[in-house]
Figure: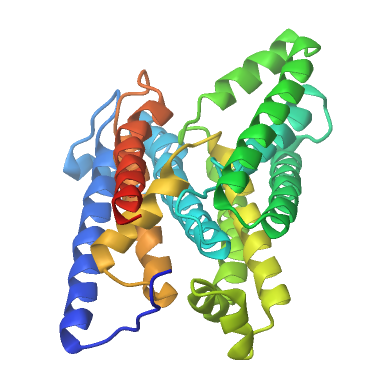
Amino acid sequence: MPRVTGLGSPSRYKRFILCFGVILAAVFVCCFCTLLFGKANFGVADLLAALAEPGGEDVSHRILWNLRIPRMVAAILAGSSLAVSGLALQTVFRNPLCGPFVLGISSGASLGVALAMLAGVGFGHFGVLGAASVGAGAVTLLVMMVAFRFTRSSVLLVAGLLFGYFIDAMVSMLIAGAEAENLQVYVAWGFGSFGRLTLDAVWLFAAAVAVGLALVVCSVRYLNAARIGDDFARGLGVNVKVARNCVLLGSSILAGASTAFCGPVAFIGIAVPHLSYMLFKTTNMRVLIPGAMCCGSLLALIAGLFPPSIPLNAVLSLVGVPVILYVMLRGSGRS
């Protein structure tokens, strides 16, 4: 496993600052484009006027505050939450191909949403979010049991694949007995979109992401040591069991919240951590966590700029698949 590196020399500081500056500037530009462009394009003056008067009743104000601002916030929250979730899972399991989508955690969240939408287990945003988090947490628990029973990482990936197939079978059974109206809502949700979040639900999504991030960030000392091994972390005085449970719970909440509000979004959780490693050239989680959040937000915002007729996961696959292939080929070459 790679050695845990610190912030290092002044040249490394400059690299971090430069990377963060460039990424944040690109995020700002993408946010501005998200607000400007759509089926009805805005001028810069119209955008600034609409932002200055949030209570306006004309069409431009409604489009901006009811559609585009929630879509921008959803992309930022979903991108950052999935990126941090994937980074934490790859670190805990010490497997570069781990992620909420590959390990079946996103599928577990999808099952929770299916129970809420198709079987009537829960209603409203609280019910959907709670069901998604419970489903993601249940799959995370199963993955933990497999990961700590078998030492080979390939077994973990196969287990995630099997969990995904099993969950898909359960969802298919729910679909077969669902009412037409509920089925239509669930199918639309399953395509994945950042445009489904409403302005009233922004605070709930943000609160869930904040809780998940807090659980991961409070265990950053464990994450830095876990890349070498749990025994090394124990030698540093870290309570491995408590810290690992906090990380896995936080990752489940992050994946569940993103899936609940944006649908199943693929490849951000597995690809963005590797993009962060390549950009920042460090394994220090105090740098990688905010770096992954910035990279995930940028990737999600870029994907959200494509026309709604193009599926969101199709755009993300264009970035995610090459990154995963690069990681696999690099690992094969080293071995």
